[in-house]
Amino acid sequence: MKIAVIPNNKTEKLQQTAAKAVQILTEAGATVLLSEADRPFDQQPTDECLSQCDAVVALGGDGTMLHIAKRAAAYGKPILGINCGHLGFMTDLEADELHLLPQLLRGEYTVEERMMLSVSVNDNEPMTALNELALCRNALMPPVTICIRNGDTKVIEFQGDGVLLATSTGSTGYSLSAGGPVVDPQMESILLTPLCPHTLTARSYIFRPDSALSVTVPSAEKDSVYYAVDGRSGQPLTPNDVLTVSKSPLKARFLHIKHREFYDVLRHKIINRCE
Image 1: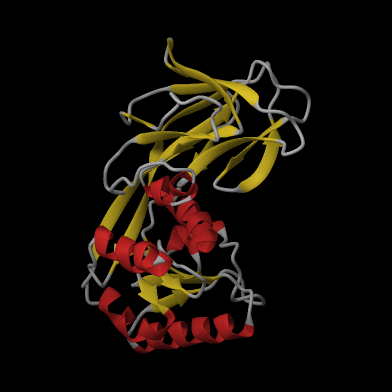
Image 2 (image 1 turned 180 degrees about the vertical axis):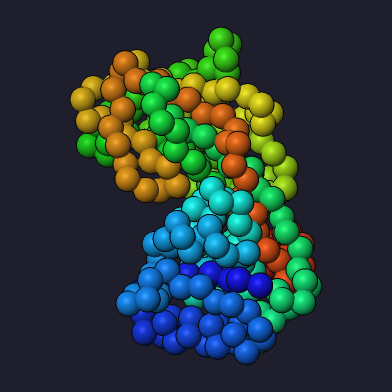
C-alpha cells in the first residue's frame, strides 16, 4: 500500500510526530511517499505524490485537513487526519495514537464521503469548498444588502454583515459560530446562514444538494464586500458580480480507524470543551 504522508510543517514537534508516523507505516509494510526529497514534510503535496498514492495521511489541525482533503479529492484519494493542532474536529487520530496506523494496511477502516461545494464568480473557473463560502462586509463599511436566489426564485434579501453558504461538514465551523444548525456531515445539503442580519426574519436555510444558489450584493460600494472559500484568499465582490454555489462533482473521502459516531466527536470536541 502506498501512503502519502503530508504534515503541516510548522513546529519541530510536529516534524518529529510525522517522522514517527513514517517509521510506523514503513515497519508495517507500507511504501511511504513524501512531497519532496529535499523538503519531505511540506503542506503542499505534489501532483505526482497524490496521483501515485493509495491514501493520504495528513498531520496538523482542521486547516490542514481542509487544504489537503480538497487536493486529495481531485485525485479520488481518501485521507486520514492526525490531530497535531488545537481542536482537530475533522481528524480521526490524536498524535498519541500513531500505533493504530498499521490498521490501514490491514484494511481495518471505513471510508466516509463528504459533499463539497463548487463556487464561481461570474461563471469563471470554479473553486471547491469543503466547509463554506463566506461573504462578509468590510468592518469599516456599513451593512450591505445581500440577495440570495435558488435558480430563478428569490429566496431572501436582507441587510447585514454577510452570509455563509456551507456544507454539512461546515455546519460545525463558521456557520455554527454564526448561529446555524448542526447537520450530520453525511447528509448532502447546502446551508445558508446570515451574518448579523438587521431583521428578525432572516434565519438559516437548508437546501437540497441539487440547488443552484446565487448571491449578489446590489448595494455594495468598492472594497466594501469580500468573499472567501474555506477561509482563504479573501477577494472583493462588486455590485455586478454574481457568486454561484452548487454541489461539487468532487467528494472528500475521510478514512476512519476509530469508528466514532459524529455526535460523540461533537460532544467531546465542541460541547464538553465549552462547558
